[in-house]
Amino acid sequence: MIDYRSDTVTRPTEGMRAAMMAAPVGDDVFQDDPTVNALEAKAAVMFGMEAALFAPSGTMTNQIAIKVHTNPGDEVVCDKLSHIYNYEGGGIASNSGCSVRLLDGDKGRFTHQMVLDSILPDDSHFPVTRLVSVENTSNKGGGVIWDDAEIELISRTCKKHGLGFHMDGARLFNALVETKQRTEYIGSMFDSISICLSKGLGCPVGSLLLGSKDFIRQAHRVRKVFGGGMRQVGILAGAGIYALDHHIDRLKEDHINARQLALALSEAEWVKHVVPVETNIIVVELADGENQQARLDELRAAGVLAMGFGPGKLRFVTHLDVTEAMIDQTISVINAMK
Ligand SMILES: *Cc1c(COP(=O)(O)O)cnc(C)c1O
Image (tube, rainbow, N blue to C red; front, side, top):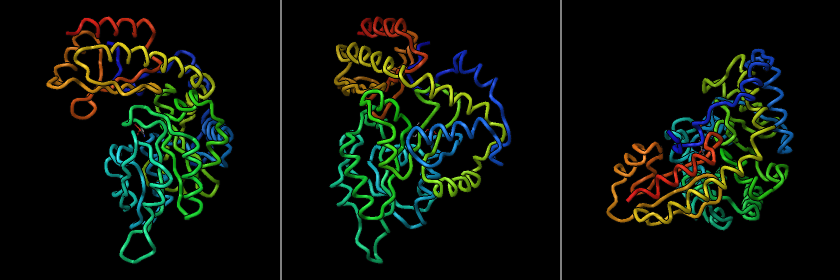
């Protein structure tokens, strides 16, 4: 099976497994795990931020960030396509007791003017606007990349109005290998950044939350409350260090593969439209009258796994375990489908 359902389906490489086996460990709840400490320090330095926290998932690092930034009754501003709103089980409400102001952006991206317009007046009728969150790349937007100039304007707007500014950077490195933007510049614009190690970077588990020393001190407590305090997880952090050293530049290959696949898909008669590919996510809109499940089944029967992505849409994601030969094979499958 050639698996394009998600970039989370990767298996650790030999090199990563060796790094995991060799990692020194300790009890990370006591902050005694040297490999976790090294991973957190490495990521913080990389983005020019004071501190970092290793957690089991990107959902947890996002939810910890929201919890630390807000008080119950506050409002979180994000795009209508954002993962924190759509795919985290309603956690903003259940974990933090916050309401959400959804912005109607362009493929998951909004402007500083839209943020300005969303800030509620200081009036006891209204929730307190407290936090703005952006997602780079935008998953539901089709892996599209934010314009850093717009992010900088939003960052200034947040500072001016006393709002926290968070990035869900589950696939931030997919954006950075394309824009070649400096990590320190990205870090300078945010109060907190969440990064997934278990997506394109190919780790079995783990995400990082970056922020100030004080923010991460509070995040450490929330991670414990959420049940995310882990013990000898240097074994997993070792995979993270390996990924940051070896799996960032190669994301470009995933993007080249995605563009090739998108080209083949755009020529298929059963496809109406392919969202222009910017990174490793391909979102396909099926032609009118097409049966989504039947197409998924047909692909599966030919050895190709994709995912439904809302009505009439399929998602393909390229990753570390997709080779060029697999892309060629998939293109043959697509070309053979009537
Ligand atoms: C995958 C993902 C997350 C977090 O996912 P986990 O599976 O909890 O690690 C967060 N945001 C985006 C945009 C994602 O794609």
